[in-house]
Image: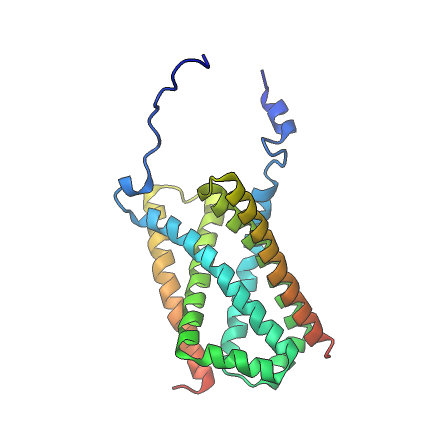
Length: 134
Length: 124
């Protein structure tokens, strides 16, 4: 058995073989947003530590988050957070054994993407309104 | 021959059964309301003054929710990042080192955030 030349068995096709589908993209997006949120968590830790350190450290962090890059980062972070949360709720529903038919998964996929964009914009409209930006 | 009962008693290859799976779901459920709280907190304090933010974080309810979020998210993040590494990194050294780094990272952000909140709460 062990001496026999190893048979070249077919492997499962890699990702690039498949035609891109919405549900598959959502699965990938769930992983990417999850990994990206690790950076967001580090930023949250940085912000909290700065508040605990005093007004000078806080001003420094606020300066960063107030910049164009900082704002873009916060916007992206909010979107990733909401997208991952909605995607997670979808997974929790699936864990109960419901919503696994093709129609429902397509609705869930669309709902996650549209919902995450709408909610992110809504959150920041309220945020800027709070700041007196409008 | 292994019966299903024997397989269950062995708790799988890692001998941990579905512990990690369950912990990921448990923290996911906890994270849903806690993330809504975080978004509310961030939106309510964009561009706020130092005193206002500090006063809000000193509130025990806010501090407890923030601590709950940090701990739940740190555990959830560690499991998720480990899963990605286990799926895509196949070099033994690289994989082991990355898995260690992920734990160190989760612990570092968790401890730093916890200390910050405690420091603000106790007002030093």
